[in-house]
Length: 148
Image 1 (tube, rainbow, N blue to C red):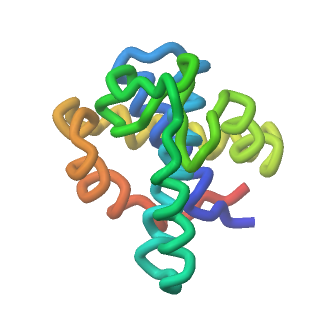
Image 2 (cartoon, rainbow, N blue to C red):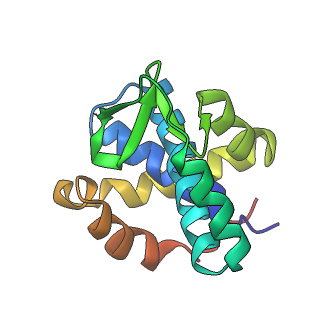
């Protein structure tokens, strides 16, 4: 079975966060939050007008105590120390569900090995820049086959 883009993005973002110095549990939460953020952006770009209106209404709700500095490099809000996206706090358990529970221990390991190999070669300047990371790392590798 080939792995779709969502868990690959989550793993790439996890290893990006690890290289930037975040602890593993927070890196996993960042990984899943980033994958969700990109999925939302993609859906917004290809969706109907009604969905856009619903998302705009969600944005207007004010959430107290959001910290925009903790995960500034990722352009993610933080709530109680974890990434917050689309009205939900993302956790390391959410990452594990998407990468390991869905594809099994061996499958998750293959996904993470794929991501780790790519991230090792990425210049730090790309890791610190959302647009460069997207264009220079994600786009060339998003359709790499990872078979589990």
